[in-house]
Amino acid sequence: MGASLLTQSRADRTKRMEMQTAAEQRREERDHTEALLEAERARNRAEESIALRRACYITLNTAARQYLTAQVDFMHALRNETGVEAAPEQLEARRTTHRECYAEAQMIVPLPVLVLAGAASRRLNAGYGRLKQIAAVTPHSEEDLRAFEAGIDQSWALLSEMRQQMRRDLAVDTDPVAGTNQ
Image (cartoon, rainbow, N blue to C red; front, side):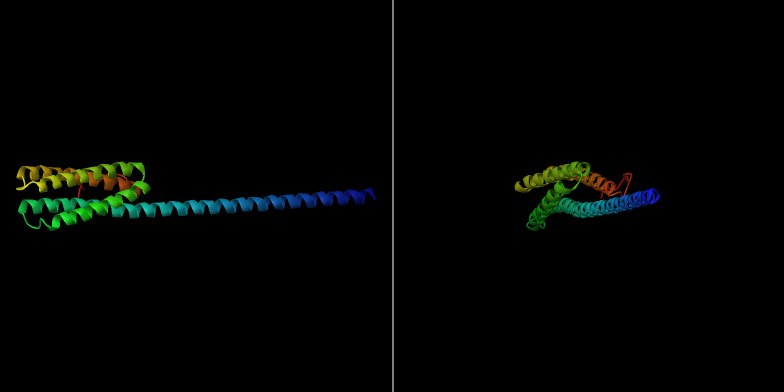
């Protein structure tokens, strides 16, 4: 009788150990599955973040370039005294678009890009203000127009720096490319 109790006790203990091992294995499999799901979620969040930043960068870069181009067009209109009526409307529309894109970027982009985008935005807005001052005085001073024109290269350079930082953030470029200011 002692032998059968001992056998039964060992069988029960073996059964408990098997159940504990099975439960531990299920727990490990569940933890592994949860870890895989979390890794997949993290990957998806990273991809969504990149897609969101890419879209923001495209619209901000486009808006900034169009804002600067509208300033150049307005400068030429003032210099040539042709199309002076339409140029300010175009410039104002580009400024509004740029302001909206920049506001969106302030909520999305990382600080290194935002610093350069802010510098470019301030430069573009300063150019806008200067053009408005030049346009308010008739006849338009050729000296003022030349001074404004000299600053255009600086504006293009800031836009280029901003674009390069965007490309680095998206891992498109790892090194800045020289001479890509337009």
